[in-house]
Length: 167
Image 1 (cartoon, rainbow, N blue to C red):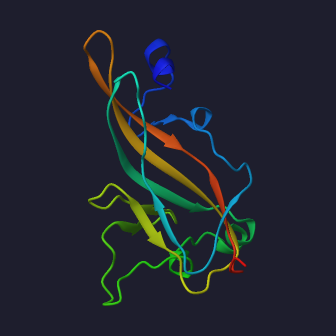
Image 2: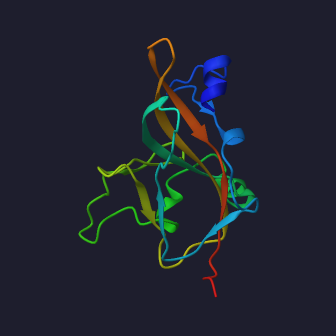
């Protein structure tokens, strides 16, 4: 990825137009990943750079969209906030979790905690669905000519939500 950044125009790399990195990341399992009820999901960055070109990487947010046909066919122009069916959005005290934000367009944003990890928990019962999520992260790169440049990147996998707990 660093070689491609240095020698080509991959995209603008801004928060509004992050560079897609799906081609540079090896997902071990080519099938839909599946999440179940009562599951904690954590996304974080881990990298190694033997060339010392990569100065810093930070998770910006995870963005979740329900792309399930049944869900979208039932909306009929009213996206609302269906996320409380899937994820815990509040603490036991009833206060909203500060790093989780359901947007008016029906998208759910999960920001990183102080430790740099985006974390969310599924509910005790969840409906079956297909969700698309994007992990948006930034990277600061040191090029040979001593210039540092920051880019934003996006990884867009898809995940299946299953109401059946694993056996």
